[in-house]
Length: 246
Image 1 (spheres, rainbow, N blue to C red):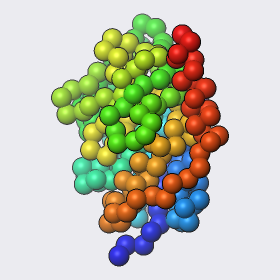
Image 2 (tube, rainbow, N blue to C red; image 1 turned 120 degrees about the vertical axis):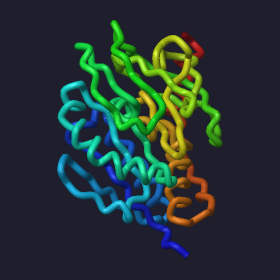
Image 3 (cartoon, rainbow, N blue to C red; image 1 turned 90 degrees about the vertical axis):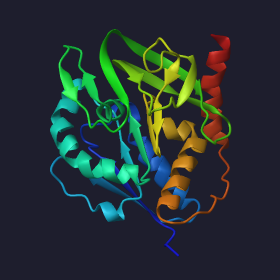
Image 4 (cartoon, rainbow, N blue to C red; image 1 turned 60 degrees about the vertical axis):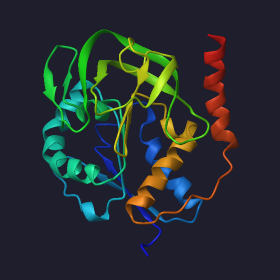
């Protein structure tokens, strides 16, 4: 049987770390360790190698247009192997800029079109205004509660093709594009979203789904022991209450 441990690959933490995105890998590692599952965070910057056989879960955060441009070429070069691994079931959480770069293309505020990895069946066009504020959405993923909360701040407008499905339906905030009430995208075991804040400390049930997927990718098909999460869900409920009062 495969050893019950996890290696979390954090891509480009120096450039892609807006609004506390690094907190997501900390939350993943801590929730694993609380269950006595050894968890190691491995960071990777431009030009550095990756031992893909040792990676169980990938995380990449968001960045401003200038930061995305700095890592875009390297990400596309890295992405050929990344896409192959994702297709084989490697889980990934992609926030904002990472979400955009996983798609067909991303259009910056000055209408420059950056090619994406073309893994996610999504594309992003430049918007005339920014979507900023709290977000509440409801997901069809197998988690309870079904609500997901976070904070969005993006100028891009992302649209989904037929191979990607929305992560959730928005009841507060703009979501992907402010038109179809979708937020984020799910394809294979990749979860992509505009939710910063950090996302996972306020959504521990989503963190646990990613951890379970990572264990499954290692060949360990067992359920995670439940953890108390009163503080985490207290923060979650605070944003839900804003939705009810809006």
